[in-house]
Figure 1 (cartoon, rainbow, N blue to C red):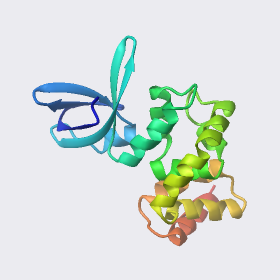
Figure 2: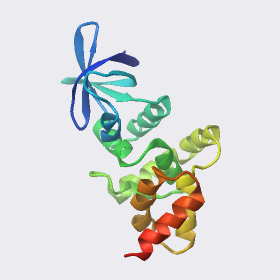
Figure 3: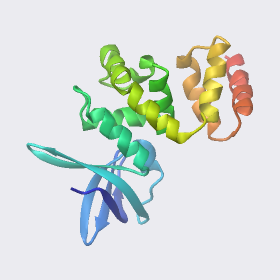
Figure 4: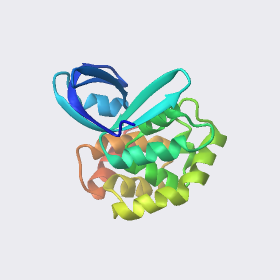
Length: 189
């Protein structure tokens, strides 16, 4: 089994990297966000999961072990394969997904192509306790999560605020700054 890969990126696509190690180029499927942070010619180090099927061996890579752990939890659910799991992880960063699952926000997961309401509810039901333990180890909620909760308490639906907050959180650190900027954006609509 290949558990970790380090090497030079010789090719990059939206959801795949070709990583050269010991003279061999290995295709590694990644989220678009992971691919975005990699450069051709640059070095990378990824935690990996090798998916073995009847007609294919596919390698999935993650920059953090926590993302790999969540990926493995997802593929452990009946009806979720590696491609669906990577699509779920492409929806948002690890911490946001863990927070959504902890809150029982199945509607958030339905944004993923191929994940309907029933499957999203199944993911929440099966993973809530497992990711709850992950969240306990990670510590306090992030500023993005706190801002989302505050905006929801003010009556703004999550479907309207999630992307706005995610974008703003990249530039602002505190929940107060994120909330203020999000309210300005939402007020301008």
